[in-house]
Length: 397
Ligand SMILES: *Cc1c(COP(=O)(O)O)cnc(C)c1O
Image (cartoon, rainbow, N blue to C red; front, side, top):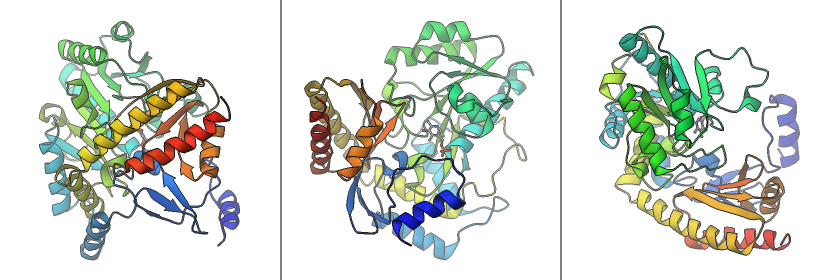
């Protein structure tokens, strides 16, 4: 099928939920993707922070292929070794004691919300079910995670939403304190609001939220679906703030491209789940777990975490230099390989012009350019991104 037919048939047969760029990607290798005509694009979107080790990483391909030949799926009526190994490794490298495996970010957040409610109801009684989340947050598209998402525009037309959620202002401790009630069971937030415009909170704010939660016996849930798995330069973003949550969710980078999500918690909290309280048919299947195990292996033993951290420092430095040259760049912010340029102009046309110059970037919140390339991006590739951006901004002054 030629590219225009693929696009026409997509419109004909797929529900119209995505505003896609006019590009059909046929294959990928490292930080590059190719269309059917063989044109090469530098991929600084990486499947929305998913392909953390790039495309077609030989070790991941090998791990998936081997597992596919051996066993793809069994359901959770039985034990499988990759699932147990993955849980053990996640526990070993995080604050958590227990893991629940699922298939996506929104599902990981549903698990976190259910776990928080159940723990709170069991511990403090049936009244204490409220979850406080942040305006501008993004937690997913299923009903509870959509309700948790503090963006009224995304919730419109889907009511009634799930009861028991309240919203407050991100990075404002007084507002958070004021929003707490005797019914508050948990505070849920992203360590960096990624979809919300790459908003990095204050270290003191984060430490104070942890203190508030501990003092008032409120659970702290970190949605690390985007910030986790080394994206910010440490394996998990909470490490950067010197605090630990009680529950954490992961997905995006976890499987290096294979769908998998995880909800992690301390033993005390996780004990609220018993057999029959939560489940997933596909969750933790051997294929996805084999992929995630290889990803963790490459990050930790294979040095890819350090490589990503170094690339992130170089990218941040280059973007800071760029922002000094062009007045339409209001701010550059981010951590590691999650970087944003806050513009005073519309970001969409910039994304289109980058595409014309064969560089894939993303724009969120209308005017924040977001960069989330694979950890294996080279300085030369970052230079290519920067020269394309510089060329585009030069035309605008
Ligand atoms: C992408 C994202 C989600 C949703 O993940 P899906 O896999 O699309 O369901 C949730 N939270 C955050 C912070 C995300 O970036």
